[in-house]
Image 1 (cartoon, one colour):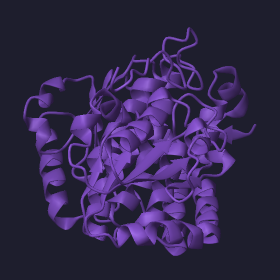
Image 2: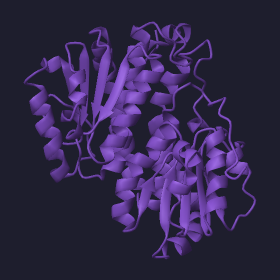
Image 3: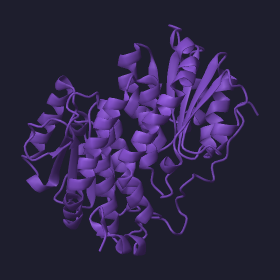
Image 4: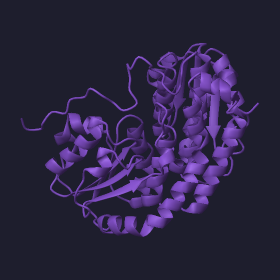
Length: 381
């Protein structure tokens, strides 16, 4: 009988998990495809971005909603260092709610919009408000849906460039998996100096996780943890936020996810710890930052059983950790790609263990794949 991520295919089909499982497993192949597409369209992308990046006063704003906002959280620290300029991650939900605060400084701005469907109301409205509030604004749209409003509604090609991911990245399942890692990678290829060799190494690390960690994720789910805390510092804090959202979404809130930084966890959020709390700690590849991750892991082992703590790391010397091989020298924004697959596997297995249907955890429509119901109000009635 054929198995997939630790389950037979018929079990996944019967329990509403086949799409999500396939979309988690396909990510190495999708990344390779994104790298090839980026190489094919690189000259066009560079022609759009190069004149903008030569402007010393250019501000870059990374935006999206939900998981797409966390793409920006992951990328912003790395891009600040690489580009040597102001790069801010601001959710579309914040831009729409208070655009005059988000764009308080009337400086030339590149708005980088991330979206799986490009059809959520905030996605398009944020671009409209940026154009309305700012004098000089350009748009880089990174999306998985060529038919979405975000990809199709901008008419001025001199001010807009669309990076379209392969169709496979447009996840059919409720939760964003391939779309999240795909958009992170596409932006790194466009702005972050990532090359195809590095993508191949990332794909190899992800294939290792997919081959070796489903059983461990199933074992964690069998322990009956009702709370999962994801810890990450710097760039990895964005990964922690996305990871906490994944388990919350796929279990329909039956397992509560919380995200914090290693240092921030002591300042109140540590109150969540009890015998039913699983802590997953992402260890930074940065030697300075990782000291704080390791300090917190050691502190947690003084108050929790060892089975309640999982460390995910690219550093091979970390005994007992979930190792991401071959990525120890990478920037954390790249490390995020194979690292978050660990959280996707945990969320999938927790969802199935709790009797949920991962492809559609909310069959009653309480929460939707593409957000509905938000009314977009005019800035000046």
